[in-house]
Image 1 (cartoon, rainbow, N blue to C red):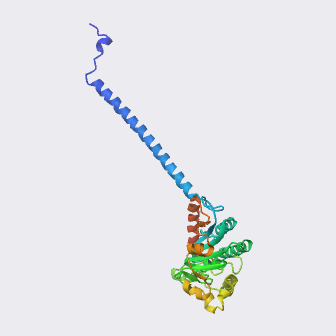
Image 2: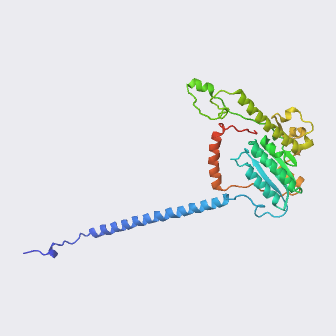
Image 3: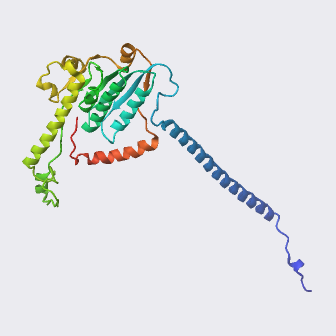
Length: 325
């Protein structure tokens, strides 16, 4: 007897449909877990993005314009000179001049404090700030300017301080170093020992002046010495103009590059008294509330400039630049 298709169908076993249900549930559970992970990643990314935005907003203060937010009434303005004075550092002339101008422009400013903690640096950058302080003093004769030395107020740092009406320091502050340096290295003997030949093509007899891989040329050394001496005289002149008769009759050692404690510097006429910034604001200016006008950089500026400054410092030893340090 022939069998039909229906006769060939076999009923499924009792456990087959259960295995199918379990498989479907497992697949659904796996898909749900995957969706959960994707949502979790998205949520965590949004949280991180939010935190980054908040951090960026906090750090992205930007330059202060006028007085700081939330401050009202008469106050003492402050601009900080911190670290090396150089075009690619935080203590560069553009930044410091901007802070000084904003401080003087505020009608509630009763006095300006330039707080300095610096070993010095570029004579150009220091000279620009010195000139601007003296210009602002003439423009705003009713607003006194006081320099306050921290741990170190040396060379280019003191160059800036000399522009103030008066200079204060801690008794242990290091003050002075009125001199100019111009340094480098010589690798001539090392090149010979290593058997390395220097190949350099220049147009101009002195274009490779003081090349560290070539012997010193006495004429070039004499030329650089004249330049350094000239910059030193400019530094001395600035200190004399800024300090006036308070220097008395300084001996040759005063401008020799020596450094003194704040206490010793009073006897030398380099410092007027011992005081902190808060003491000057309270007891000298008479406006105890201090507002910091030092321009701040945003996060992207700090990162990009830190990278650039690191690269510049790596090349600094090769650069022939006078240095007030």
